[in-house]
Image (cartoon, rainbow, N blue to C red; front, top):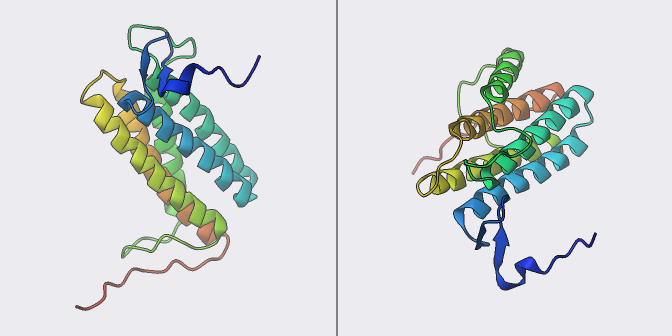
Length: 182
């Protein structure tokens, strides 16, 4: 099987089920943002070097494959792999609840950063928020599985907590944001 199909050479592509859309269609934008998020998680995983974090990120990547397929498949069709579920959301919440007490309490905003791994996780968090925005655009014109919105929102929260946890585990100092006086 060739990797190139030439189907998209005219600026159009197909969703699961064969519906043809423009490559900048809100469906494609949302799926693309989730795909980018997944790829950046792979970079974060490579930088972390921690088995527990690697396992968590791998599970998130598996979830994002489900989310992407869910977004690309009309509600009337079966994805063959399931839809974004409440259990996926509960799993994120359990990780947040487990990691939050293991981090220093926040008393101020912090600047995204730290070491390479925590900085990458902050970057991934911002891309997850962009995926949320692309989903919001899509949801105005198409029916989407409601759990996707909640999942992406919770994922951004988890990524923030995970970035802080990774930073603190590495002994890195978080830099508080101190607004400049005008």
